[in-house]
Length: 213
Image 1: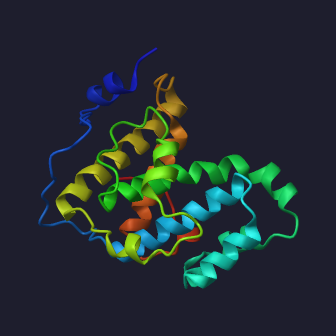
Image 2: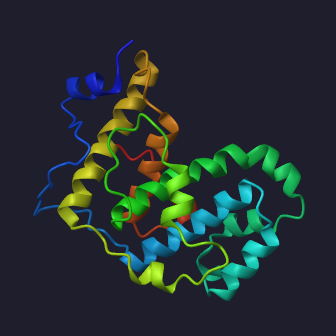
């Protein structure tokens, strides 16, 4: 079976870990999110993943409210955190919510907390994510949020362009033939979702990933 790198190269898609900036003066997709918005969204995603791993939801909700972040939790996320039947919800949604760490990782890259994304052939470094990058769920978040700085738009555009091309190609390949054996589709999907949110004015729950490039 073909590998993701060979597959991407055959489609003319750049496979380097760090891409050259993509200049486009005529781009009609300006990035609508500020560094602060991205940092806050990363924190919210972190709490959803934490809840899926078994951290007490009541404590998470209390912490989010104390840090004045509850208003940024989407309606679906609030329902998840406030569920009166966490056992049932975890059994159904645990894997999906843990996949959100891949969207979180992609957004951390946009605010320069992660050095590179590369091809979607492996999951994020969960230990580094929890132990080194993110604030603990008992600590204040102001320092983390204020330290966030968006990468230059041409750099963001280059990565978004690659993710979009890989995503569209993967959808087509899944219908017409075999997918690359080392491509992790869940990682690719979450990156696509994160970047669609980054450059749209839509709320997190309303993002559409099936917009073809």
